[in-house]
Image 1 (cartoon, one colour):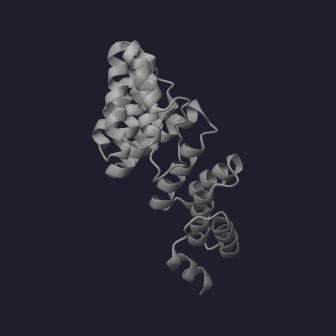
Image 2 (image 1 turned 90 degrees about the vertical axis):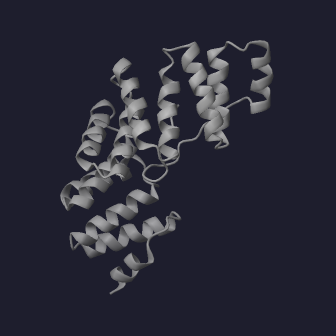
Length: 213
């Protein structure tokens, strides 16, 4: 279970069976349980108490260094908090032990995107897709990068793939609409704009005006 930025991904949930109170009581009986600290970190993350979640994940890592899920979650929370360098550092440490951690690659890509280092972001998302070709998150982010660089063919390809994998993904329909608009394919742009709106996505009003003109 890991956390990705809501800015460029569909929301990742932190389901937990036990509440914070339940886990804290269990830790009173077994304070050296890495798994209990990890689950308490998940519980805090679920209610967006990021600092407390970080603290619990770090304790879990200290007690059980091989618990790479905790390190990936730390990187995701640092991403949420805007600590992009910290996110990259933690993700790279996780990849040293497990080069196939898709979530770590995605976190690195999003962090580099926020830093404006798009070539490194692109490499990270491409690596994520070699590990998991069905990663909607990687496809939507690559689509964004290609759209920003003017490679409309690739932008359309990746946003279309994201929709194939997740048909009700409003952001992907919006981004595909923008890609088609810039590629002068107006009917397709209008179709995907309407789909994004029907899914509740907040399409930019200026873009809607441009489509209507």
